[in-house]
Length: 115
Image 1 (tube, rainbow, N blue to C red):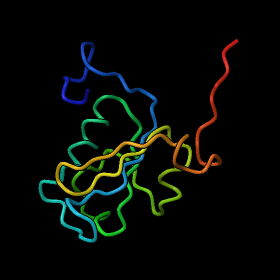
Image 2: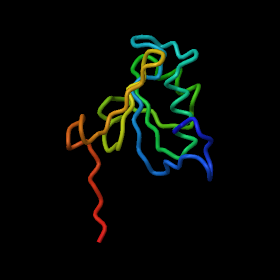
Image 3: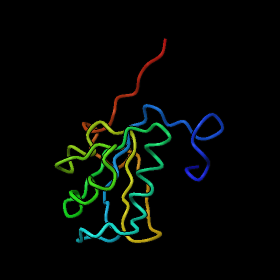
């Protein structure tokens, strides 16, 4: 879905809150060169998603590279009130997680009711 161009013919993720966990190309490093996670962050942001990134090692470098998204100081801050999360480390391995299934229910967004 993110491979399609953003705009009228592409995906519209406006208002979707997404946490991206991991900005470096592998865990336990601050090296963001050719990071697939930051590529995904940019694409999500271009499609209108509200992106929050958390990576305790690579935060400073990632913020310099992609300043247009939010950065969380803690894991809890990153996932709180997010509709989806991406754990993005290691080239080619990205997993998506719904907050409703994996994260504590107090962190998951409440479903809105339509009358």
